[in-house]
Image (tube, rainbow, N blue to C red; front, side):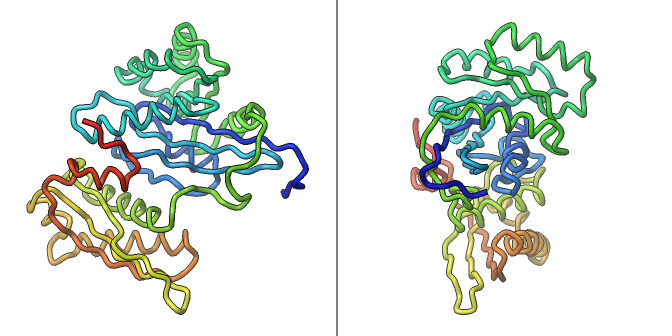
Length: 303
């Protein structure tokens, strides 16, 4: 629904914060109504802040899918956790997403302590309620509300959509007055090139989930719009070891071909045009210590 330019509008940033695999990316996609953040069964898939935009009537909510907060061990880990807390600190509303089936994990306990530094209103979102019984849900909600003054508590399932609209209605009603930051029809702040790289990274993780922990990343080397309107995309999968390169390539190149085919299919659905996708695999032993890689991912290099 379009809004007249003179109509009062509201616009704000809503951070989705939680432990790895709490369902933040799934919730973001459900809120926006389209896939803007990759989702895999692998924890810590989201590496930087990804923004999904929802405009409804006079309101525009910019949801920030932050990396899962966990105990960092490496430079990349520290950069991801720092990105999550930065996103929370800059938001107008912070949504603490908790996997209701897992309950009070060590990561959740750590985040509860960190929430004390947040000045914005915080809401508790118990996700995956379809996997937990009501008595445990109520106990979990009470335990967390006794420790943090949440503005509201929501119980939902991002995967099947139950309760998502109630959460969305509350968020939109609590946005601050102000002009929109994005056009009405825009659903993400990611460029087409970054979207393409993220989709390929998702298919990579899905295919080699167990063999390649976190020693891989995907970068777009070329993104060209052809005369017929199709996209020609050339991407490089960087891994840290020759053994990982062999795994990603697979016997006779079958694994990388399968990754490319899955990524190409999804990209054509997303972009609504033909996509020519070319994937290459290269070894870069210390890509995770390269400042340029962090800049491309939107992360602070740090120490």
